[in-house]
Length: 186
Image 1 (cartoon, rainbow, N blue to C red):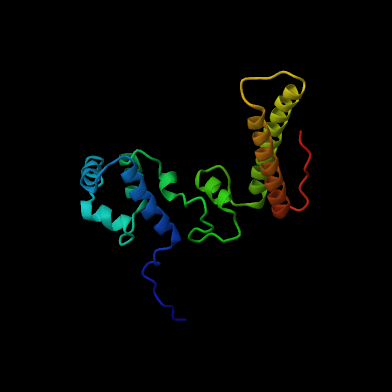
Image 2 (tube, rainbow, N blue to C red; image 1 turned 120 degrees about the horizontal axis):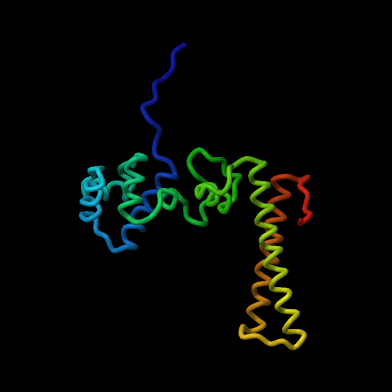
């Protein structure tokens, strides 16, 4: 049986995210490519200014060793450089069925993309929203009982509404991931 030899895969969407994140991280701290290149050399990973520009333009790939050194030099984290923008719905090799929030949490190391761990994640998100909603509700009740505080009532109402929407979102996604999930809050 004859197989075609593949010499590397083409760059994917994650490469695009990393390129944009590198440029944004460098520019955010006001560092030019020459300084970044010098700091990379000092960190033991020689990379020319044109090499950095090529990575930022998507014309050159970055390996994991360079990625960690770049994160250090740019005063950020490897996870931040890998993280897609908030609206991104896909990463190389990952099915598009995951929500951007799930991808963000996965890159940050807060969740595995498995049913069990996503159920855990969404239960935690739901519990956090319910707890915050209850607190806001207590503050609203104290206003209704005449105990006016420093923070305007509208702020607590907005917090309540935000957490109510968050709870509904987490509940909906939890039931998508596991239709038999228990919704009891301990």
